[in-house]
Length: 291
Image (cartoon, rainbow, N blue to C red; front, side):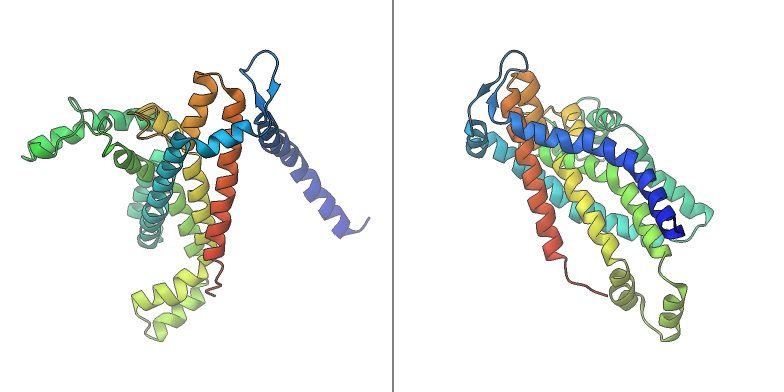
């Protein structure tokens, strides 16, 4: 056996266990869920085949599209909130001094916390009676701005976007820092010798060099935003009156609260299809090679 064949065999042996687990716990459940979308099933007892009835109901369901709209708001908040903030922090914190490491750890800390803990913390911050936010507004003489932040339909969804952005800036910042540190120092030195300004260097050298990383981060933002669930479920449960309902919370409520497992499976399949379409669309829009 040649060295090349040995290396390939070692790589296959290393990847195969993870691949089997991924197929068993991710790919198979996706197709299994799509299959159960063709049935009327309560979770127990016999499942009755009803064809495309569940999928047709999903398409006509106004709450489903309300959840999709809310997911799109989260996608927009993530792409235009998390990514630029993470990029700016990465540019400022590329060096490895003590101060930079401290700020990096502080920004990354929310990611270490459980989403349930983050949801509970922000629920207390937004609390209308004992919340820190209303207390600060009251102390600053801005009593007219005090709100029941998670109970008013007009602002509850926007209030939830802030902890979502805050919670996931850290990992994207680390990804961008790693990409920036991989830019060859000779390129930065040549730009400095040529007298390239900071803004011109950013748009003509730095961003094109890490463009592939930016595309990966945006895909992660979109996929993460479309499966947002735990933080929203803890803070509002999808209320008031479905104002903060997202696709994942609606799927959960339809499946486990009213015991419509077939309909919940159809919703989850629709979420996967919409996620793929959005990710493919974003990749098409960003397919230009800036290098």
